[in-house]
Length: 332
Image (tube, rainbow, N blue to C red; front, side, top):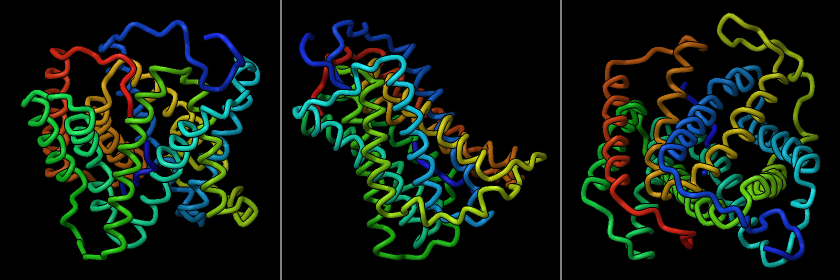
């Protein structure tokens, strides 16, 4: 979901119109979708890093990925489901929350955090969102979660800490830590709002308009006309390839944003948010693996062990979830 450097009836048609053909929950399908979404989200760092090395700021990369993805999804929606282009007033809170928090908020808070604290620390803070989701489900929804699910969540976070290697170059910066916590809160909101919205409404419309809202918000921070156009045609270093920078931005927008959000939101039609958020911890594993393969960045023994620990924790969560009934259209 995030741009993680490896160094969330009848009547007037609307974009999130309730789907009368609400799918039967299928945990296996949901698991496959969230794994594919994590792979897509995890590709963002290795694809975007060469563009930033060429001279683009992280904020401009975020604005480009979300803006291009929003335009692409609007075109797709206009062709395949034009009725979903209409918006009803009652649907605006969900769209605004999903777009501002689940799309723009995660990106902006993460980039603000990495500007002040090490990337590993920022990554660890952002991906504490499964704990926040689990606490929300337990104490706000008053759903009792099995002990194995809590154990798996803690184990997965311990593995993430090893993958992120947060202890390297750690310096305390209060504002940076606050931005990291903000990224975690926004990421948790992505799962909770996405779970509610995807099960009650059409995910295609929800993702499209969420990206549009997110693009507007991010472009306020980094207006497109301030992007140095001369950098877009420069050659970037991506392993043995040297594609122009603009192609990397398109790839991040299509694969790591539009497709990733569609896969992740559709997964939330089949998995509870607390389960999906833990399985999404596969994203940093994908990020560091691709960075090793494409950018020549090294993998330490601690990171490899951490990846195995993380996978073990995610497996525990998935096994615990398989014994639990899937809630129908949960409220965020």
